[in-house]
Image 1 (cartoon, rainbow, N blue to C red):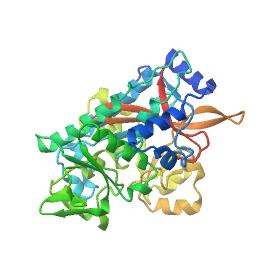
Image 2 (cartoon, rainbow, N blue to C red; image 1 turned 180 degrees about the horizontal axis):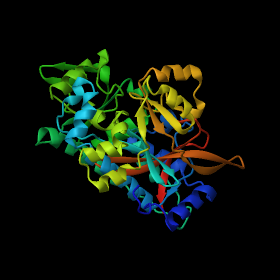
Image 3 (tube, rainbow, N blue to C red; image 1 turned 45 degrees about the vertical axis):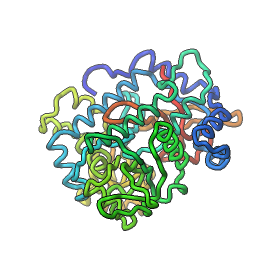
Image 4 (cartoon, rainbow, N blue to C red; image 1 turned 90 degrees about the horizontal axis):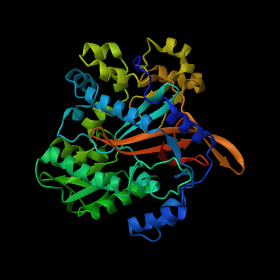
Length: 425
């Protein structure tokens, strides 16, 4: 940040840190959560089928964060999306993006995910994600909590998120079409029933249906594009809520989606253009480069907020030796990666792995260690790493959630880990 005192400092942050270290109360009412999931999905076996086998999807404990830290993270998001509107930024980001990404039909990207670590100097942005998973599940999780401390406040009231998400899809439609409303929305992934977060596809479908939209869950490979109309199972599709991680629709099974998007025949959100401008990890090179941002004319107040992004550089054969020597202070991520795959903390990198990284296709990011949430398991107190995710639309906050884990990156294999609700202090 600038020379000013970090927003997140002060008694509220101290209180939240103390609670994260010393509050072991279990707030998740799993029975209430299951009943809510079954009611929302319309399936009395939903919890037994989709949730109980995922033992580490939800943590039993909440995470405590000061309201000022959330406000600071929100300002970082606003600064990033303001920067992404600069002509010079767009030109640079799109220069390394696939050709299809250069087509902008209007949508700005449903349910963006901005991931933060809470460092000693305040929140630090670690990653930006399009089609960020977990929002619908976290919204329901937040409502299945028992109060355990007098000084906590949930950031969302019941159904606030679902109402905002419905308005988000309607707004995405208007940005491309200008009038009317989508009659049918397809929630799309590859083999959706096999996806770990398939339960939230069901929740999204039900929440949209409850608001008068014909919503379906579809496998991307089953789309057909004929006569200017995208369809699945013989049903025309007006808007695609895209969860596919082939961000440029390059795989053969995504051909229909590729062609319909390219020709503007369907509204797709998030889409290749959104990913290219915000979530391509090479963009962190731009966002963490103060000199470049100043040369582009970005105002000082916005540049100050972007100092919350750890310095990031592209790995090349030319700088590989230097990066190897300083690897213990770095984190390496593939430029086209997602979901924490093939990422490495520098002090864990073997020489065999390094030979692959050094050939390129990776960025090196200054390491920001995550803060910790202490939990109790079988009468033993253990530490879990903690990430905080802001789910946003058009830089506006929709939901705050956390993920607890062990290992190099977030996962759903950690006892006591998983999605955790955020209580504001």
